[in-house]
Image (tube, rainbow, N blue to C red; front, top):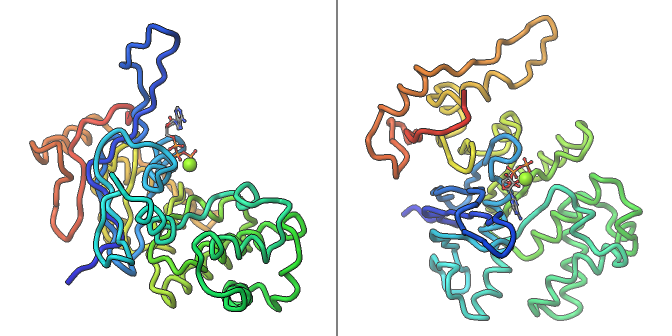
Length: 317
Ligand SMILES: Nc1ncnc2c1ncn2[C@@H]1O[C@H](COP(=O)(O)OP(=O)(O)OP(=O)(O)O)[C@@H](O)[C@H]1O
Ligand SMILES: [Mg+2]
């Protein structure tokens, strides 16, 4: 039977931006506006879209760093061996959640305490969750440093975050997330601040760790080429909504939504003599999509597990 690590149902996260005491409550930014998806155990989903479309807000809502406005989020609770809604969790269940759902951020430096050594940084989650004896913890830290390619580990244990390069710091962040043995990790643009050459090695590391440790990623990026490299399926987001979702190669070969077509047409090609034309969205394109189905509440299944939104989406022309 298909097992999921995360299930998102009709998630909405709105930010109230009304000012002053006459707050009407009507003035809100619909950062995430009714999205649904699930991720199967061991598979990764790319969440792709331009700046401001709601990717980080989706991640922050799932990890409870941001309060959702509506909808349901269910995670696979390894303790109870079942899908569990994040609403109304007991203290113990919140602990399980914090162990089972890890996050890797764009800027690892920001997520680390500059006064802690690498050893302390990676050790902390084990201490918080009371996992293992002191000796077992020390061993686990050494092992995970090796796993993420920071070798020999002795060279890194007593160093501080500022003494590492950006790529090395991101390896520490990956180690810190994976030492908890999560089955689901949310990665928010984890390589976008790194040099291109280092970017590839971190991406390779993450792909191979996902396979070895059977981890699923929700991999957030504005770069479709990166999502293609990292993910089994891709969800394309625009203005708080998912406009299209399909298996990676299916989405790239047979894009249906004009926004996806435009995104694909703007992937840079390595041949400098070849100038690709960026796809221009027309009114007819949008009408075609909107007429595919009357049910605007759900993504329309075009077959091949390829889903597209038939919603009227503002701001595309
Ligand atoms: N705390 C907040 N208060 C008000 N508006 C917010 C807040 N956080 C995000 N937003 C708004 O919500 C929308 C989505 O932002 P979000 O950070 O999720 O986008 P993103 O897709 O991650 O963009 P980027 O690729 O630039 O990281 C934006 O319009 C943003 O300005
Ligand atoms: Mg973001």
